[in-house]
Amino acid sequence: MLEGLRVSAFLAGRSLRRGNKGTIVLTVMIIALVFVNLVFLPSIVQGVVVSFNRQAIDYNYGNLDIEPREGEFYIPDGDTLVTRLGRMPGVVAAAPRIVVGAAITFATTTRSRSVIGVDRETEVLVTRTSTRMIEGEYLSAGDRDAIVIGKTLAGEKDERLDQLESLGGARVGDSVTVAYSNGEIRRYRVKGIFRTDAVGADSSAYVTRAELADVLGLQGQVSQVLIRTVEEGNEDEFRNRLYAFGVQEPISTWQEKSRGILADVTESFAIINLISTAVSLIIAVVVIFIVVFINTVNRRRQIGILKAIGIDKGMIVNSYVLQVIFMALLGTGLGVGLLAVVLRLLTVYPLRFPGGPVYPAVETAQILQSMASLLIVSVIAGYVPAWRTASEEILSAIRG
Amino acid sequence: MIEAVDLSRVYRMGTVDVQALRGVSFAIDRGEFVGIMGSSGSGKSTLLHIMGLLDRPTTGSLTVDGVDVLALSERERTRFRLARLGYVFQDYALIGELSALENVFLTPLVRGAGRGEYLRAAREILDEVGLLDRADHLQYELSGGEQQRVAIARALVNHPAIVFADEPCANLDTATSKTILDLFARLNRELGQTIVMVSHEDWHRRYFCRVIHLEDGRVDRLEDQACMSHADVGDRGAMI
View (cartoon, chains in turn brown, purple):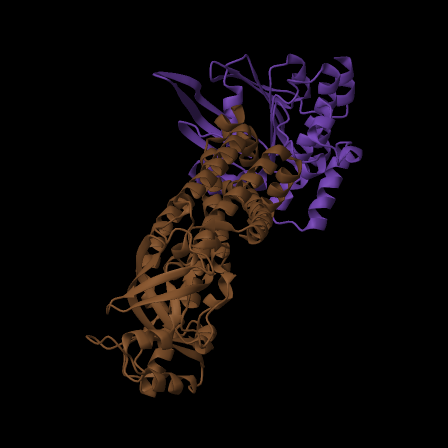
């Protein structure tokens, strides 16, 4: 076995060293590009997923979201709950919110949107909306006549520039009228406009919780409590700790809250990904098959001579397989280099998606899987034509 | 050394059967330099290929170096060729990507020889055929005669029981052919190497101990020559 490999390696080495360099370079380049293609698209898909996940945590749900029990509108005594949660190990902060539907009017344009009442002190620790102000300022603790609105809701004066229905170009300093679902109407000054790129968040408006509590006549009740945890990724386990801690209300993880849209996106991308991977691998198989087939057909006579002088067919076939393995390894190595350049570029100049900039996210497992699949298909694509040619009768091979 | 009994070979050419050999029987002893001669299409190469285990007869029996070679599997035939037979082809049949030295040490390498061993063996035999100074040259850097000498070195490096040569001088000029034939004769004389060679050149006959004349796939006659003391091979060659 090892002796055979030694001979195969010798023949492969000489063939690579003294064979057609152009063919080798071309094959290596194609393998490299196929490798880039195998990793690139999944990295973009993963980037989209990571981006969605980040937005879900940072702008919509925190890590965990406590909501009222079935059939109830509010969590009673939210303040006490928030105070208790704030003392719990592993909790960065808990942000109480009141969420209510309202009709927001700017000039002659009225839009129905959610108005969220937040406490600045805790909200800034749980969500990052306050860091994404593009105009004006975020809410202060004592604000009662101020509102901050998302860029999508604020919109542009030229409605053709809007992606969704908007207020038609509300700006900082403008006054908007908010008609709440209980009939209460308040007038607010736009204090700031934020842009998170998370569609749901950017279509919302924020006032202070004190203001909304006043509007709705609430005393300590809240619609939801968002929790930011120190560690991410073990939200399920943390939820159990919260239940053990005495929380009675239903708790959802950010994954559960964003599951619907994210699942759709991920599934769609997974299908595209699968097709792209299959096409890439088929291209690799076809190219390597053709290269090895032409190579072996051109060397039919040489293969016949090798067999005639007593070299086992397996050694001859393996010499071609080893050449393919070498080219596949070189190709994937080059592919890793190309990929690094592409990823670097896309990190500096990220792709712009409707949900915001997407940075490619490459997982080591994806790289290893692509390397392995490329190597396997290369070996198969190299083995089959080499085996076919080497199986020919010695004399007919020698006669060409 | 070689015992062929009633060998026949039928090739299927489309719908037509072509009888290349028809009941050929003969024996070749160890140390002989045997020529197989005949006109074109007489079955010389077919017979050589069958004896050299590159082809199988349709009927008959064949013993080579004491082994019933027709009973061997493909893998066993490959090993047999490697271990006991050497080949010299009409058009040299060197591996173009290998140097002269590499072409020669390939079969010892396959047999599992260590680096030092196969390099020494290859250099010795290249020296024997007068090409040690061309050891690192590739095929295209060698003349036809040099390529054929490399092929002979490759055939001999494993110390085969029999060397088969299929018209080894067909592509060479007369002077170079003589060099090659002298080399064969010297190997036969000095090393006792059994050589079976196909030729259609009448003047080659002088080098052979024995000639098997084929005609239409049959043995036309067996011609025993005084198996040379070989001392006069050079002189004979010079006379041509």
